[in-house]
Length: 246
Image (cartoon, rainbow, N blue to C red; front, side, top):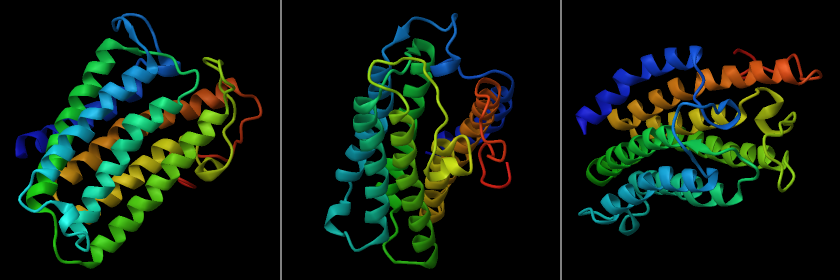
């Protein structure tokens, strides 16, 4: 577990720097040279579901299954992780509209990350889930809930920008955190996992939150630049990633 967490910590800075100079080759930035294309819905389902399945196996097979101690903070943290990845690996891909496919190499990297992260978070929650409520649990869980709700809202807003059958069509997203930032979905996910890390107060959850930020922040900047270049009436006062700041 320690090695996996350190790998996230060590990989985060180079990922952050690399993505500022070269976009991840999927979605609107898809390009040749990264292998054959996997259907978008299939890619999302299969790359994300290891986090759900591995974590669920470890949590449910632990000596103290969370569903038997639901009044404890650790039980809610287990629920938070499983709820997010149930949404991300099942509901989200099923509801996708007109998304471009994912190159197999990108799918493989995402699959590996989710597999490792599912083990890290599942193992940590199964062995070290907190049993006594502390102040940081309330703060972290409130942030997680705020972030997760806004992830769902942002995804719905983006999905509804396209009519059924449209592919590669981009319009100005409105509502939710999109009032303040171009990448409300990424901003919300960072808030979500930052809250999770605060509540867990563990090395694996902190490493996950840091990697999430370093992976998504550069993409948010590129999304912002893309909107400004492609959409003439794009709101000029909207920030890229952090409301009012960045």
